[in-house]
Image (tube, rainbow, N blue to C red; front, side, top):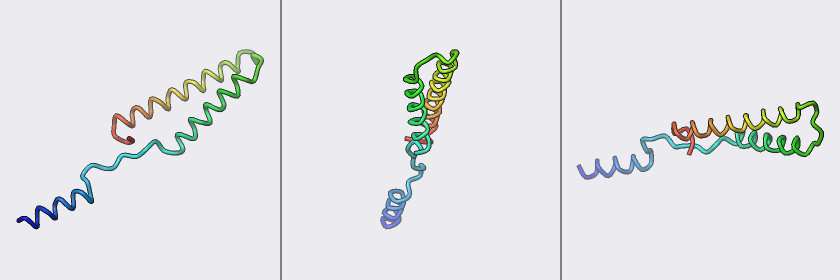
Length: 81
């Protein structure tokens, strides 16, 4: 009985029951950095461009907000750490 208990304990240490959580995928981090870079470029571009530059910045801000919400959802559902 004692050997069976030790084997079970060793198995649980090596193969835990819960799946391992992952970090945020590198592609998501890359996309976030690209969006932030684009926002920075547009903010320093000068001119109003008929309001389209400001609208583009707002769309980028919304995209970053969506990424943040997606990350929050993934953390709450244990898809990532």
